[in-house]
Image: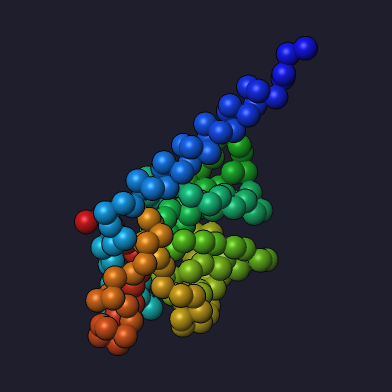
Length: 172
């Protein structure tokens, strides 16, 4: 009788070796991030949320659907809004520019987004005229670089001007 578990063991052992090899070469010469932070002054950050006309969708991420409106997060940039009343012909409503936006949620007619380190509540009851109703400063930690490596010491809060907020990362 043929041993049917042999091919399975071969695949598992091959995957194991691949994982071990990948882990050992992934960051072999550098634990420093390949990204550079983008900072904003606190006052600029707090006045940066703006409603704009429809914008090109470049880097779509999380999608949220509520009351025939599709909300699409654009990483670090903001939220696209699309009227999906007629799914065969969706209509772009506009874009809410939210610097440092990495997540969104909706409850009732309130859109909750992160504006870098702040939690912001936006009244979206009229999708063509959203406006900020509340801000909780420093509700979140500063974002890590996309490669998840630690933030270099010269960029941490304690080593920079107190009015600067880390809002996003870009490739060096």
